[in-house]
Length: 618
Image 1 (cartoon, rainbow, N blue to C red):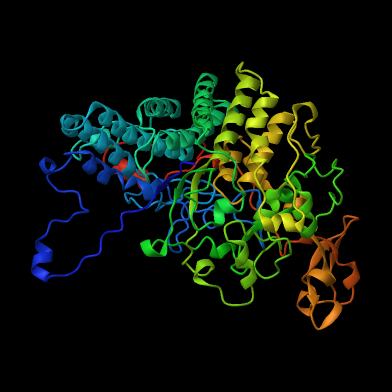
Image 2: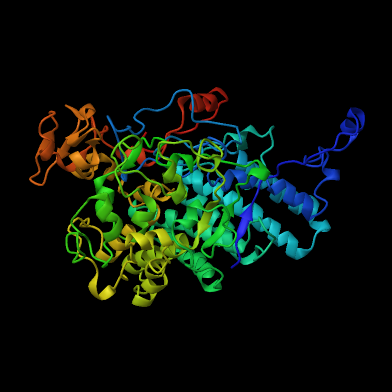
């Protein structure tokens, strides 16, 4: 299977022949200062475009970096609960931050995973497009010109999609802005829909003109289409569920569907690898599901720490809550309340690993973790199975510190098919699209469920989940009244698939379900079902709970009572683990769907005689 990978330009090793001769040599990895010496050929264009890759395809980041990294960067959603008070969403307008001229990737607070008010990457894309048209065009073929124009328009569209997702209305620039053009530089916001129409046009051009292959490690039409399906699904569903513009919603959703369909129809990727291997493999080049990935390798001096924070020892401040555990489907394809799977109603981790969709066992430890998880449920999704064998001893570099070298998937087939089926269902429900068929489910959700199981999972008794059938959709008593049964199952599939990845916080934002973060039920303050004198036993006194839990440990028993361990009631400490010192967050407000800009930035515009309006509802 064909996979697309990328690495960063790391420089070269030089043999020093003498200081003077070395210093006199031209810098081979730096763009020349004079344009007459640049934009000569495709190699120059590629060198300029390489800078986009580490910004947009972060993977597991590097070293201890967390921006846009799963687990360490995306650890804020309704899936996860922490000890003590839950983190509040932004409640006030920032006074001294929020604008940035740096090219460094950042995440604007927990609830808005995206860039700050920063047009560096827009300018870079526009600079590429300008030089292509005005300098490079005579030097390259028409096919090459269209491809590199597609590259520039893809990254411009990508950046504007992220900016719009954070701020809504935003100034749109499709040309390089001269430093002596303040009226342009300090222009007011353009309407969200108008900006995204420009993004739509960019993406349409990309899907028509980008190369289907441009060499190992470089973005091509398939990788771009997969990512476009993500970005257009976000905007199309935002337009729908936030009651903005139905015509635009339909247009964007159709592009999300068609971009995903393009990848699916190619037949280049399939669900031929187990779930665990997607995240814990040293080499994803041969993985049949991975469309684009980032290489980590000691030889390249590119390493990360995400695997370490999934090794069973490093702390996970936000950990899976009972609400998430209850959402995992049983292997007979039914919700736990209606399942006939033996032990389906047991929320012991050991039983959940066998009775729930295999992604549960591949994502979480099947025993409680008392030292590193606030809910006792620990995610080991991003570390190899062998890593858990080092708990209590020294870890090898592979799973310790910031020296992990497992590759990171950037986009994979599961994302594509889930984008496709959701876009189709929204179009069917609201915009006259064709109804989703059983065949559609078989090509998407049910194809995911056919993934092979690895040997460890099989040995534990893990089995594949039954297919989702239109004729007998699960009857979930917890389903939101405003969500149809089929859409509920599509959303459940995303929740199971993307735990600790980018998707959940973005999904509940675009569905206008951010109020889930108000933790409306008690399940959000609970973890798995524990047996105190088994899971938290005193090793020196069989049948007793460790003394350190006295007046601290609480469980919610089968009768719904909260029981506190007093040092003598060991046998009563059976029930759902109650997160220690749990306190809810301040209520989410409607304004939290978008990010404010800093007062400092508004004042900067004002000082120059211009007006920058604050984000809506702020």
